[in-house]
Image 1: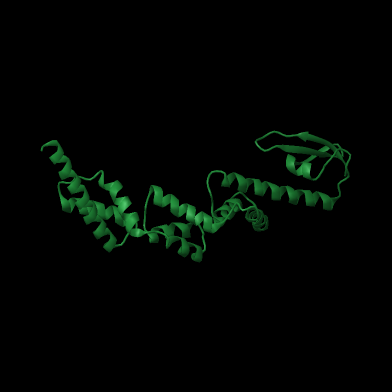
Image 2: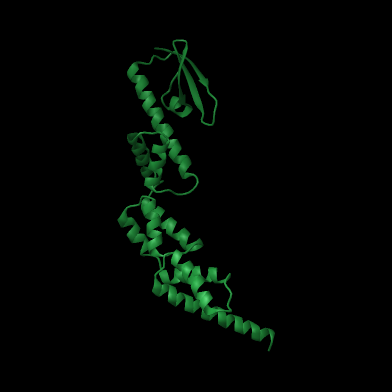
Length: 218
């Protein structure tokens, strides 16, 4: 079979429509056609056609992984699941993941630390809850264990409590403690840390309010 036409296709991905022996046959990514040096007049055997299909499928899979990574870092398991959902077979997905590892674009330990740091900066929570989130991302247990140990739960609970306490009244300690304790509980913290944190934040907020009142009414 001879290539008789190579024409640019339409769509988001740049494709080349290939005609064989004067009839439309298939399309390839433009980058695949370029890498394989396809040209009008070139003869293609059945085995060569199968090889081109496999190479193009692998490139499409890799491109899909790149797009998925463009939004934020991902765990290896997340990317693999995404590729399978897009219809790629396991072998093709694993091949794409291997290439991403070679290029340093996926690293489960780095991803786990990114996730942990992001949580600590914007939404502090306990080691247990952070670990649960990372397990849902498909990360290995040893990676999770090493990263969550970096979390200072006392500090995380305190920072989370300060943010919540801004919206709580200081007129009733029992009400304050109940609401703040429930909030910290949802963040995964244990009773001891919750109790100490609640008392600490109440004391600091109460003291600050007293000082402010004295400055206004000396």
